Image (cartoon, rainbow over all chains, first blue to last red; front, side, top):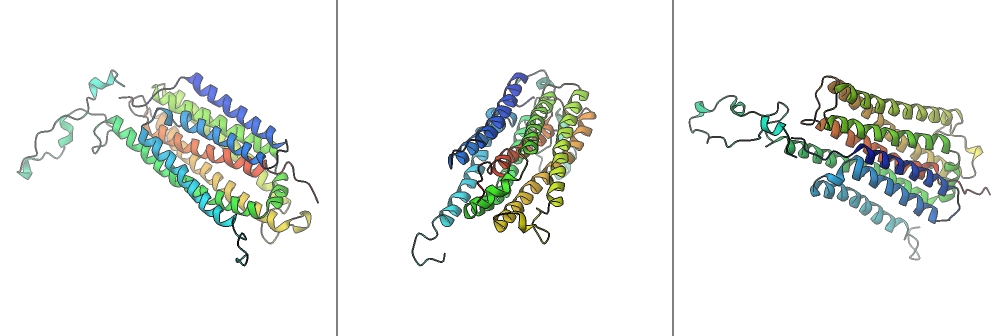
Length: 100
Length: 251
């Protein structure tokens, strides 16, 4: 009754190597002045690393669709939080005579 | 996945209809068919039980995403208000320590994944315990480095509050805000690490008692999910806290 996929060890080692490379890359990029793109680059790498951990170390890759949906919904709700809050903070002052 | 054990634990059988006579209900009705000792009675079989536990853990982790999400939200708001101060403050953090700790946590995620795998594949209890203990050791290393970093902040009067040294910064209010968020976020993360070490201690004891094998390893799997989640939080904390100040230009 072993429910669940047993991934080969070699796959885990590959993910581990990819995560270390990602870390090295994100540090390297931080020393190059790309302006606002620095943030984009570092968050893209971080999201990629998180995705590798979620899909492989956390077995979502081999899990049910329901599990995948629950995981995705968590990040989607986070996006709602960020979007609505920043749509307030970043647009203050657009209208003359506003509070700010 | 069918295997040899399926013969011993065939899952539910169709039980006879419950008699209208209450006395006819056996006190241990469930023992009339063989099942795994770890199978709880409200589940059909071990696979369903494992799936329910995993999904339940993920629902908890989604609440954790929102829990940390609030702090990331605060970070985003205050950084957008005081970008230069955040860069100035970030430049003071040690990329060496931060990068080292990132590598340590990633390594601990690998050993945790291997701990789960060793339970999944019914490896000896000693092997399972070894992976769990290595993971715990790496967690302790992480917390040790964190303690060194915190000590430096206290020594240098960087900790927000009455002893915060405003004279050494160009943008003291924003820097103080950055370090408030730094201590909240890394502090909450460290608290999760400490709770994780507690869970892993229990897990190591259970593994030592030969609890886990291919038929039953849900606690290892679920504890692993928690440990990896804490790793993911750090994957985002590291660049946002340590790496945004490399281009801070004084003046």
